[in-house]
Length: 152
Image (cartoon, rainbow, N blue to C red; front, side, top):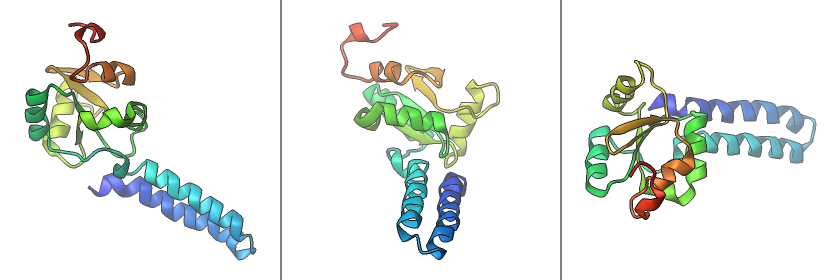
């Protein structure tokens, strides 16, 4: 769990250090702007922007029940962040599993990625896809007409 928060905490600390210079010189507006920028970056790279993470076993169970894809991710991953942001509200319809919180999830990702913890790894109908296009992932969501779902 601490690995997921390392980058956001580091960004907050760096922001405080960077903002301290202008603050000492009396440039409060510049200091506040810099601190706000670093706080925004910390929020974006924190696990808070992702839907609530479940365990690997629970995500597989839910996926079998509703047909939703399982997304293995980790905090600080720019590709995971890209997927999350591009999916928008649809991201809540997927089952997110943080590989840094669940050793079984990390093992599942290593098993399909030649021993590497490459994320995001999206599992759809039992098949793994590494760093897929967000629009492709959106088309895999249950409830969409089958003609928009390639491979079906």
